[in-house]
Length: 133
Image (cartoon, rainbow, N blue to C red; front, top):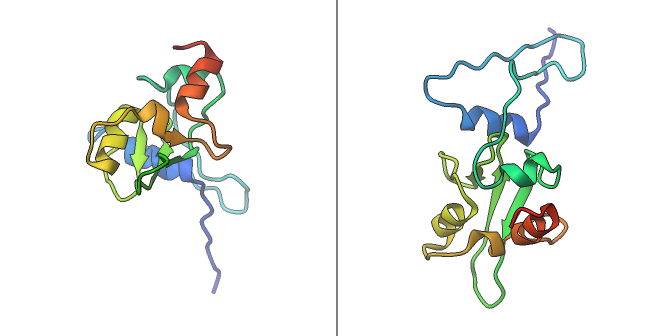
C-alpha cells in the first residue's frame, strides 16, 4: 500500500489559521513533486508588522519568543503572512505585538520590546533598522 507524507512549514499553518471565516483557501497537492502545497493567492501583510515584513526583516513564519529580564514571562508566537501574531496555545491571531504580549503576560506590555527574533533582536530593534519608528 502506498504511503502519503505531508511536509509543511509553520507559515502554511499560520496562513490557514489567519484566514478569514468566509475566505476559501485553495491548496494544491501534487504527488511526487517537492513543494506541492501552495497557497492560491499571495497574501499581503497589513498592520503594525507590515513595514518590517515588507523590508524583509521579519518573514512570515518567524517564531518570536517573549522574554523580559526579571520576570517569569514566557511565550512564543509565529508571524502570519498577514502580519499578525499567532500565540502558542491561542486559536486567533493578534493584530499587534502589544496585544499578543498582553495575552501572554496578563499585563499591559509594550510588545515591541518583549518579543525577540531567533537572533535575539527585539521588534523595536527591527523597527529602528527599517526606519519605521
